[in-house]
Amino acid sequence: MLVEQGSNFVLVRANLQQGSLNSHFGLWFSTAHGIVLREEFSRNSEIGDNESEANFHLMVAYVGLVEFKDVNGNGAFNNGTDTVVQLMSLRNLTYTPPLSTPITSQDGKHGIQIVANSTASATNFVFGVKADLFGQYAVVDGKVIAPTESKITTYILNFPFKNTGDKVALQVVAVSAYNIEHETSTSENTIRVRSSTAQGFYTWTPSATVDGQTVTVKPSYETVRNHAVINIAYPSGTSIIHDPILGIDFALPSFVDTSLLIMVAIAGVAVAGVLVYAGRREIARIFSPKVFSPQGA
Image (cartoon, rainbow, N blue to C red; front, top):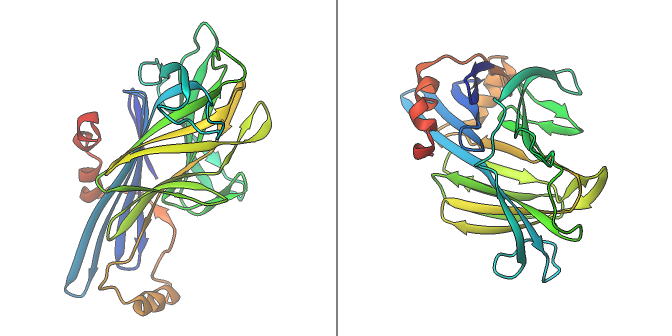
């Protein structure tokens, strides 16, 4: 993986080769306007006379914390129903520069961890985000992380609750070029965007760790086409830690003969699930500063 470090961002880029498919993947982690993560995917493929190119992105921004009284008792933050006690903007805080360091997964795979958090306030409140990426499939905290996924950890420390019986909702804004859907199951909650060649997702389990104890978290959503506001509500506590995953899945182009790819894989030509250094013009174009500017998000 190729890592670029700036004063308020870290950019990780990689190239995934699968036979004739050449896919580019990257994560942009910025603190210029609060903490913003943006995953990008592109693919160039060529079989015979057929060529295909696809570009895709999903951005998530951590924008606010809402302390509220759960009026209807459903555990989630329902704007207009629950009583807002205080609203804290996460975009207006001062953050440490994102720092990238090498890490090793539980199964011995090498990767990159990016960390940034707000600077301590008079109340010792801190909001921070960690992102773990690996060059191949890796096991982190008992979960398998794919090459095109980032394991995220959000932490809220010493939030200044007005009342210990209140809850706090972390507000996350998701933006893509495609319509955003949300899905709920017994094991996870997901917001998802789909194109003909790829789908991006931000997914989290319905449990978090508050003051060392496992607790249930409840989400609520406000979705308008390609924008979504996700409110993830937690019980009060001095330490609130949650670990979602931001990732991209991609599909084969319609002209690819899957049996051909299987034969190529058996022949040892396809390198499935392995990321190598990127440096091609395609990924340089996709990860240009213009693409990543807030105005172009």
